[in-house]
Length: 332
Image 1 (cartoon, rainbow, N blue to C red):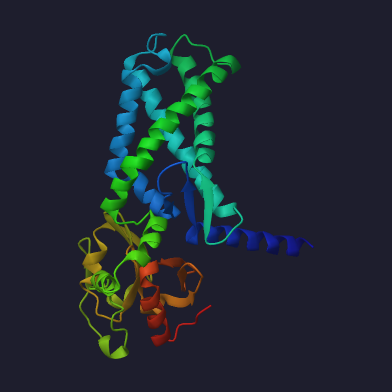
Image 2 (cartoon, one colour):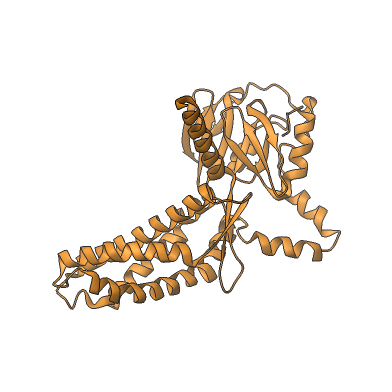
């Protein structure tokens, strides 16, 4: 009985890990196109300079307008700036945690859906408690249930306003700069309206430097030239996968991982065709590292020998499936 319980627990943890790596969440709202993203893409958004500048602007606005009258209640300017910086950081952290929990635990398929008011309300309610507790230490304002009841409705309206500005104006700009394609529902709806001659041109342009164009063994010559990334040299046969994270590359070899500054295009330009596969604009995987391909109704996932699941972009499913057949990779 005990072993069975442990086994079920391990199965549950494995499912949660699988959900975190392969699922996407789609945020719905009363207006605008619902963004759809993975947790990896969410982390990339939070790390961009555009988002950090926006968060800093929110802190400065809250300080300048003396929201809730903290400075009038005796709080110093430096403490007020620190207070609102903690407020924004706490809000983003709780918001991201709610999304991660929903991705990991929610029932459903490859894409799970959530109303934007759910993480917003949870994040702002907890943040209000933290901010009021801190404000009581730096000013003459009291912390208690009456103060919470006064502040929470106003803070919810305030957070909805700032978050709406982010969703409507800032996030599309970040999406364009990173090329993530967060507004996938709108893209799929626009696909049938495209001219038939335009589709092949788009695919050709996207895959112009893709190493899976010619996956035959003949196009995979042995080469002793090292691959140079971020000023460091790697033997091609030692590479397992390379993952792009904004301006950095996570390089996995047979002996470990390193994070270096660079672009995935720097790698693609050096490796011979057929040495690996680029299933997603943020991933390159060595041929020897691929253990299988899991096909799905909406998206596919490459299974690596390390147990890592690599998402396959919708526009690259056909090429990746063809490469998997040529490489005689097991499909699930």
